[in-house]
Image (cartoon, rainbow, N blue to C red; front, side, top):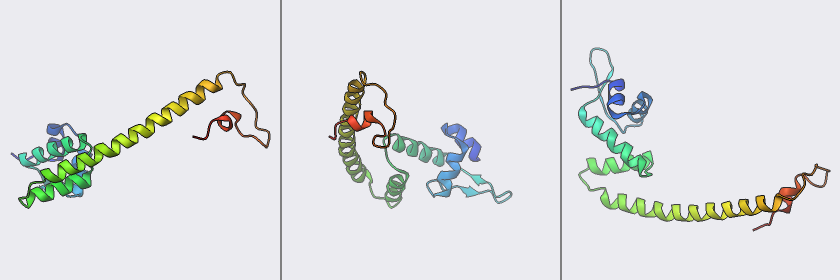
Length: 137
């Protein structure tokens, strides 16, 4: 069975623009209908689109997904690369989460210290005494 853009989008529960974008960047490779020039997608394109959705849900970029698909088309297992990317991403996320937690604590501490401080007006020397009173850590 052949699908048009809207049909594939509906089948895979994505917006039609997603199908068009993935086609434009080469993640999906449909045929052209010789009569009207419309893209025609096969059931294999729906499986590929579902794979792309799952990879995106795991944090893979479209560029990484393209690389995974390329390795697969060459008959090479992309699994070692997938493990390496995820492992690296987990480490990066941990660092980012730690930085976010530090920021959260600084923000909470600042807000608590500002509760009893009066509002101030800018006077040429000060812009906002709340921010200016915050620690520099």
